[in-house]
Image (cartoon, rainbow, N blue to C red; front, side, top):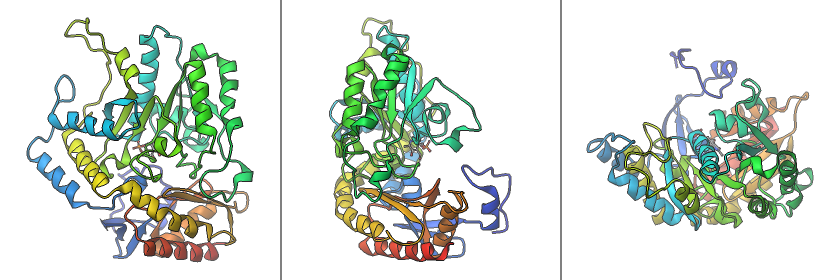
Length: 435
Ligand code: PLP
């Protein structure tokens, strides 16, 4: 491609590497991309964890077109449109029991900001305004806005920006002894118990919420040990701390259940969504909350003109986003996406774990259709081999994501057994090729 204009400042992209070996995508269909040089490339990350139902779903395209030619935009504040109410109903219907209201955003990062603002405002409304501190987790990722940058726990994402909000962090849940676990490792209560230490340090009277991803995705698919999330829930309950699940990647079938919350049997107070909400076709996110939280903002006796929750975005509940999400939810139901994931997950798990013993692999992790291989550092640099592996895969017809010392995978739910097996073959070749 001739025009790799530097007018475009690329996000989370290594400029020099990209300019040396540009990777330009010009089309997509089903589970594959088309590269600029006309090659068919398997999409092993569903875009960026968002296109689980496969690319270019015609049902979504038609719904978007119909919306764009009937109501392209409707003011988000003080007015509504039919599809946004319908979408909230549909989401609440499939959500874990108790999550009864949806606030719409435009991305996972906005969902992080929104959920944390809701948590702080909730305690204020409940007469406990000192409960402001927020707890994230080392290796967590909650997007790139102020809240996500502060609560996230991936060093390179924070270093450049300093401390942006009043946050502390739990330790991560990646234990050496769990290497090569299939699915969930056992136990993990002691990891959750660190929350008690933070409560002792800060006092529960000052803590608003804990936010975690049920499965940490961007740090390399870290699956929660079997007792971890239950223990976290119990400690939050004991100390009146809200528990937020960031389900931006685990929502809508990735785990083999509708949500990570269903897969792991723990219901949060607040759940953040985005990505597969519209199958990646239109930027949109949502924050689901328990009725008790919503009700804190409702005062039937307040004057008619008073706004209870002064928060929202120009594009909150955008009609086109709603149309895309409703069409995506139809596909989700009709094609039983969680069921498809459950059917394909054993093939995916076997493919990944069969790579054990190939050069450079120090861990393989997986749950549902999420997985990662962890790569041994070369010359004390953990980032160089995953980068070279990513390029080798791309050149062989496989798009993978490299991040930190891992390659991460989240293939579309509509992948075939053949797709997954071929993916394994390309990974094997790449691992042998890279020094
Ligand atoms: N939360 C999690 C768990 C994510 O994985 C991501 C993105 O990968 C985000 C939040 C941020 O989403 P967005 O990039 O849509 O802002």
